[in-house]
View 1 (cartoon, helix red, strand yellow):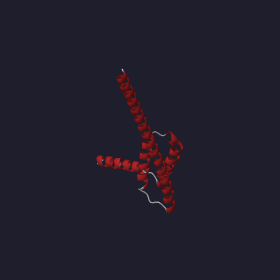
View 2 (cartoon, one colour):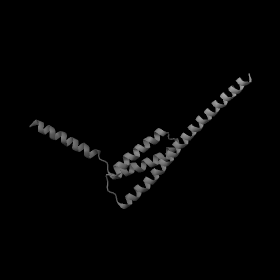
View 3 (cartoon, rainbow, N blue to C red):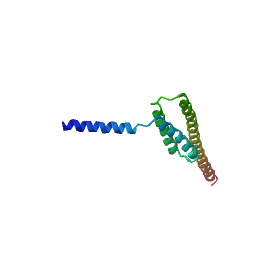
View 4 (cartoon, rainbow, N blue to C red):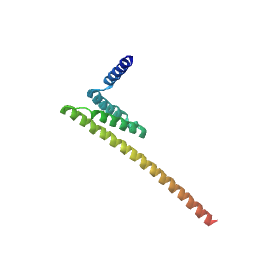
Length: 128
């Protein structure tokens, strides 16, 4: 009999915890908006790692949002935020592409310098 009461107490505790840990759609929507506001203000200093974290948070919030029913007004707000988030994501991709182009240009520049030095050495050795 004691085991039944213990089991019931554990189940009640789990149910209470689950009920407390579920977020409302308003909380998730507020977090989605706050993520955009915070990211927009700091994005010029973001590293690739920061952008990856942002993308993960955004996807997690999108998953949470998909669990709720929304009014037309709320859907409009969500879609506006999605467009803003997409803009930030494009900005991140452009930044990454720019970094890749800079790295490639630096590698080409180094290769050209090395080739020029090798050519100069070859010419010098021919002249000797």
